Length: 250
Image (cartoon, helix red, strand yellow):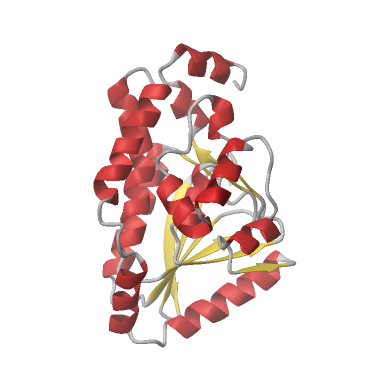
């Protein structure tokens, strides 16, 4: 696989949304936009009762933001627009009327952790270690923080953010509440995801929609909050300190 994609297929009333990017499943702006559209469409499709969010390949689940786009930021406006891609995707996921099951087969970094946190129920393999590397790159996980904190709590979010260069294990993520279950193999993970998603698809769509609304109570202000956070990240990305730091990672 050499080119990025976002695709959806339906099986037994489950909508499987899969994204891929050759750079460790990073999420440039176009992929973020396509993911957002795919989730909106699945939420409106009567043939889909529940959604599975997954990535292609068998290694990295998601490496987060596109590094090439990050280093190309040259104004506060473009910086805000870049980080708003993650804000819009998280808000789309929380407002989707159907449960979104996360299938995390490998490492999740930065925005990838935010993506997993924005799912309603997340299953992972033992290879799904997580890291928030933003602080080591001279900015911070501002946009995804509300979603991650909602899942694992402020204390654990603090630890993950400050220890920005080290991965936490999938078992750690399970213990803190990000993952519901961790499987020894990707094959076991896929079997569990399929069985669970198809079971959910037999439940009342109206009941699940109402329950999802309850689960995301008190997040209505995220429409504004996450965009405000995007502006913070965008401004920091322009600083001389950040630019010099990013040069070392080119």
